[in-house]
Image (cartoon, rainbow, N blue to C red; front, side):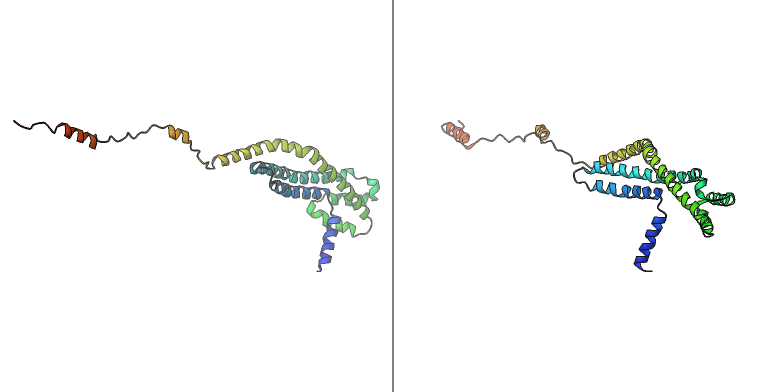
Length: 222
């Protein structure tokens, strides 16, 4: 398989399955990776603030990612209720067959839909209409998730998560060994606990000479 045909197949597959839910999930994934990365690359901020902001951004997108998926799928379930029967172009019998396929699980839906599409143009218009309505409801679902649900979830979940992260940062900071500041003034003011050694009382040479001179005329004995 050539490189050109592989790229063509990927582009065709993405074009045929261009679902709004998957698009916003991809955006949330890249934001969850790139925004913390760019935050940590900011050299003007101190490391502690950068880590806090990057962690908060990552947690926000981690909450958004599954929320988009859940609300997109819920919107898909509601799509058949918004179908206009007049635009499907089906009689009662074919309409029942079409509705039975729509009720099948996700794993069985594609194969069952392909069976009806291969019968001719009877069901192609109906499935095209279903795809348009499904993409519209999915788009509304992710918009509701982005505008209402995700901010509410973040307001509830982020405070305790970030509080725990801040507590972890503080404990890590306290465990870091800090250099001790030596106060030389206090050391200078300390009393000398070692008393000075007393020197022996020795007479100098001048005193000895004067004493010997004074005793030169004295008689010793009788």
